[in-house]
Length: 326
Image (cartoon, rainbow, N blue to C red):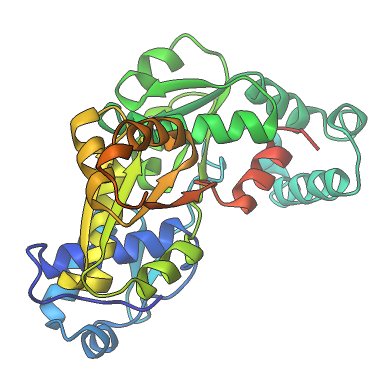
């Protein structure tokens, strides 16, 4: 991950750096256990004052995504593995190594093609818990960014071929109070809030990594100076993050316009101005309809670049394994 800070941007430098580090963690470019650059190193890379960088690291630590180890550095935390939700048993205390043996053995059986029912006889307690959790899968994000939840739910339903329930984060506690077990899936952006709500329940929380958008970032760097780039998504959160990253990488070299598909006015304005439009797959029908409506006013239709994924492939494979679907 290379950091780019635009000093003349209206977006504060600390916000630019915070968003770029968050993106690196959420897209797994900085995996759990990764040691972040020191404030001195990052000051050299970005030109920012070390106090500004320390402030950003404190904000990330308060968000629960990194942890400071005295005398060692700042490290990315492991989150959303479902470990904290597992029910306790006196057997785990009697046999301290049992959990690792059971989990590793089960994962190996699954990798070799053994079904959960075939493994039940060997790992009954663990299998029973996984099956109960798998019976109900909830996708949760804050209500203000419900579009991100729609993207996650649509991609997982297509990839896993199971029914999912989309629940606003603000309603998650009430929904879980009526459930004996389940699996909550969310983005790493919202994992801390989801785990805090699910902690009292026998419910596991699994975070999905977002797609790293390498292809789209490469395209962004190649756009000519003065180009107008359109960004269209169901998610307001994605649009906010994308706008910050665009300006962090290109500054005022290009103009970035954003629109949600439900905002017809902004969408119609965007298709008349942008030469290139990046969008998520569910937004394609609405955008094509807007282009068709504006066709008489367009000298040349904008070039569409569809991001077919929002969730990283590795996360889908992990969920498939955790839910006993392979």
